[in-house]
Image (cartoon, rainbow, N blue to C red):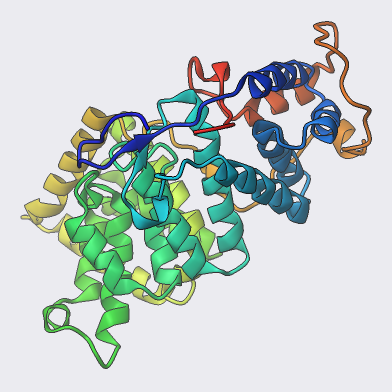
Length: 382
């Protein structure tokens, strides 16, 4: 245990044992070599090196070997679960774990990758439950950005009412200040309105109007959604709606990054709704071009940007962290078999492959972009 969270739930952390810390040092030497074969060799001797498994999962994901990537992630999760303390019961939502503790980060990464694997397999209901678990661990900072995709997963899992409840009632981070939730909530209203058991408060809502309001506030989301659905966007050129906010480059670029993530995660939802989306675009454009445009969307946009800036949430989000698409590795690595190496020698600073491969491997580090995290991103006890 590590104290108590703001809601009174206990906080836990992983603690590295002496032997595990020694293997972590060997793992760091393997990473410094920029050769994935040395990591595979290390796993041959120490198959319980969690960071090594997660690192190789990313390498296999980059080469398109998704089955092997899934195996590595599942092995890592098994090892992490074996180290749980008796009082750690995350499935009951009664405990937290701080991502700020370096030794905890592997658990967050493993859960996030597992969520992606489940969603890729079409197991959206299970993926939603894993996303809920991940969010419950550190709900006040959402370090893995799971709120940027949990709305899409909820709709794919046919849970529109849960999504609307989340949108209106979740308090640690306000979903009302996440643009994607506004687009997804419109789809949730549509799904509930067409059901025989539609709640009375939903019947009074118009999903087309909600969608037009979302477009007015966040027009940056329209083109990425249409592009993700393989729809042409040339007809949107010149519409005043899309030139309205481009002058504020900082605000515009933040919403564009969020739009890239949302469109990638929600394209299955919008593929059958592009005609309604285009109709809502015309409605939103007419409102934006009127002599007295409604003030609510502009106020929502300003409040959202201010909230994200002041809370420092999702300011450095990147599509590559969320996309299901396999990355591309340099040709020299693709042509070399992975996993056939002998166990690594003692730390050897002279080993290096350099060039594009070195740069690629640097981007795979679990602590990439998190200062000071390399000191212990694994788990061997709690």
